[in-house]
Image (cartoon, rainbow, N blue to C red; front, side, top):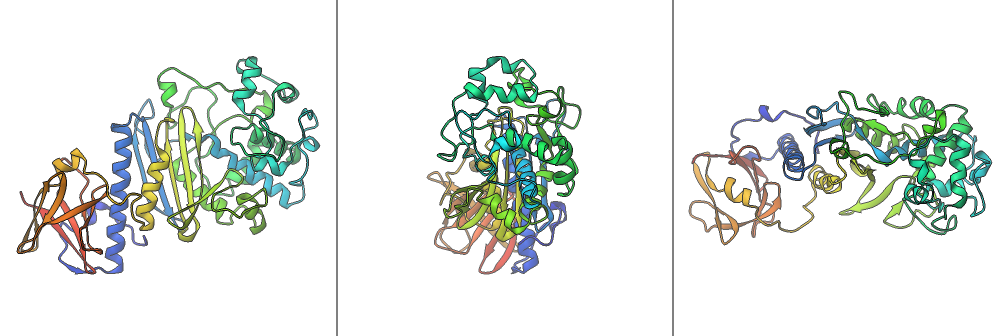
Length: 455
């Protein structure tokens, strides 16, 4: 859909009515995509209290949008700002495990204790496959810290860390359930280290991050965030997360990764596009437990669902101070990344809204209520060639009037886009910049034209 990329400033001030050619349709859809991204980013930072947001869209290996909004805590967010990516880093570990499995260096059905013999087995010994699929039953950080609060302020060696699991109840027997609240992936990170014979960060950097072409991804600074890194909203307010520290190499299993939004979007292309994993390993990534039957599947740090019938592979997560969602739509070779430095950010809603525009899908709801801002900025008189058109509000709705025709109700599709009641293939797309809309684009009967405000 988006092959020709253009800057907004390069669009003509007015378009005469003409057949809606492929290039003009692409221009309009790209312009619409940029406008929706900017509206969503500004809304999150200006109205919803999120300090900063970065949004990137890529299609078939090319960038469609790379937008940044708000503050890092010490300066503005820009396209090079690195955010903590939280549990998305589990995908790095999953890729490393599957690479090692493909070369025969470990087996997915190996018990964890084969590689970490100090892990307590009184409650069972989960397999590598069960750990990948979050079906191990291994408890999460809250359960571990509830039993061992000293872990919040002490450093442990590997043996000391593994010993913490001896008296912390499993959530369920290995293989008997599913839970994303698990320490399974830190245990897998330690396993990678053991099998590879190399410190986990070095192995991930050499075998995963660099081959994926990620230029701005790595371990986050352990203490204060220097320029170019986003501070989270909890840090800005003086609150911090609890994090268990392990000295030396084992500590790398719990260290956090930081990345730009562009790198996160590229990562989806690399992970799902065959750059890192062979076909068999990709199938295991999507369904490590071997089921792969349902429309709503949890894979190895991947959740597969459908958006209006289109398959979506995604991971949504973060920490209490950051939030990230990364999504891949294989049928369109489309990747979307939304990163924010506050856990309250509605990154999943933003991603879906952006995806629907990028994929040409209808909005999630049939009609959105007209917002007070739209009541103020959209009504007016617009000039289309020699014709005056009127947009006005009545009974809480927006109406469109052409000379010699009855007024038509405009049904909001969200973010300045409206459908005409009774005209299935007609829509108006309003300018989203400034206090008042300066123009709208009318798409009707296979033709496109732009009307400019004159009042």
